[in-house]
Image (cartoon, rainbow, N blue to C red; front, side, top):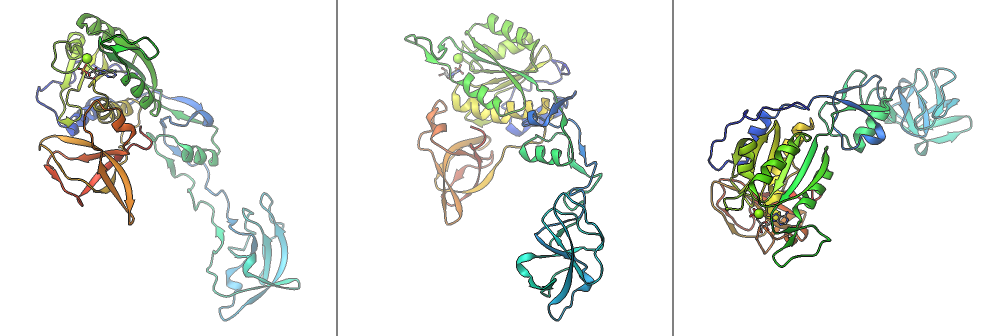
Length: 416
Ligand code: AMP
Ligand code: MG
């Protein structure tokens, strides 16, 4: 991947609005380059490197949409049933032996090519038989029960745009267009560190002042749902020299580094200084709650996102900083988090000038999604994430929420 210059940003110093931070990322992280070919079976989650132009129309030929009979619409009477003589039969995968003549109906089955001359079908359930003829009821529109060639995708149309994340539907469409492989962007290499003298590796014995590292596992799991190759770089002690050295070393073999903890103003917070020692600080401190102490910088041409240590704050900042940055490196810019409207079932006061993410549980009442605030607020409460359903997003200018207010919710489904 392209090496970025460490000083392509300037650190302004003030608390930065989330949108400003995202705009900075979008403006300065160059779009992804390079491509590799992957088989459809391995394409899920990858990012399409080039648009897919349909080499053929879909469906490739006009075909019957029902089991029934095909005929010429011009033959139908408007004032009553039309008697058509049965002539021929076409099953799916076979070709009609002859065109349909006036007054004739060809027996067809779903997916069978329309016999030349016929453009309309009747369902077998709607027909009464009369010896070697059928009686077609009046009222069928021209082209009824038939699928014209290219009605799904026209030949030469852009079926999938570059930059799109490939899911089951994209894989199916590519297969329908005859592709076995797709050109995708290379996966950015993302390294994840935890920081803190208090952290122990799960499975190890816990010392008297220790807590198990959870952020690294949450972050690696979040990365598992994104187009990247993530590596676990372990726990860094609260030591300025070792933090700076580890970042500089990892920057050589990664396209993005994530840390958590050690990015606040305490004497044992060394991530910000380590970024400054090895490169350039782009911004530090976001106007967001939870998540204020977050930093971004460049070390050795590699972006570094310093996420807060508190687990909920780390998740919020991952979603709003690390995720868009990573998607940009992966070539999938413009993939916003899913949000939906809900009605607040709580009262809340907040300071203006910062965005807040309030954990909520969701319930449906009379077809309306109601969001109820999770009762406990701490940024360190892991159980607040497992026991709630999403974040209510309260914008910078909002100072109060009252029951019944319309709010936007970021659902955890598919994310956490
Ligand atoms: P810090 O920003 O380093 O002061 O950390 C803030 C809080 O988050 C402290 O209580 C830390 O113990 C906690 N914390 C930091 N990193 C992690 C981690 N990887 N897993 C769990 N908790 C953490
Ligand atoms: Mg710490």
